[in-house]
Length: 197
Image (cartoon, rainbow, N blue to C red; front, side, top):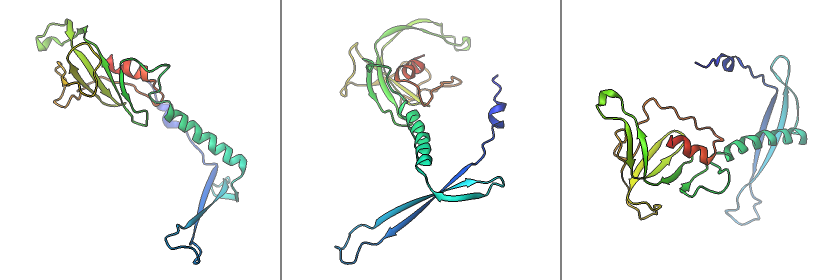
């Protein structure tokens, strides 16, 4: 078991407050009707004093804007790293959506795999031939479908129920106690490997 107590003891202290002001100025009367309002934004920065109160009000400085931009850029970089390929896109990839909580759809050809069953099912574990598969997954859910033949599927390819016991009628996989660790920076290849495993 992993000790995560320290994560709960990390204390963050406020040090800066940004206050955003908005002014919607109506269009000049002499202009054409339906002219959109002009909106002006003003940002004021406050330091946080020893007593926790905002002090030293001043317009947001270029240095503060640069620091804020770096923080936001780092967040964007993490977001942009999700499901990025390590190189050329895998040949078996059918579709990828790299947005937050995006998904990928890929194909695996027919193969032989080891299937394991608990003794109470009275099904012998061992090598088994499985059909070509279409996989659809995001960071939390997996769906699989079977396809006929050995060729890469296209939009007209018929999908069939996958020949497994833990598949719902809509192709969703019941994961049981299996834990998949997909992070915000998981590469496309690692994502596909994790779900196939």
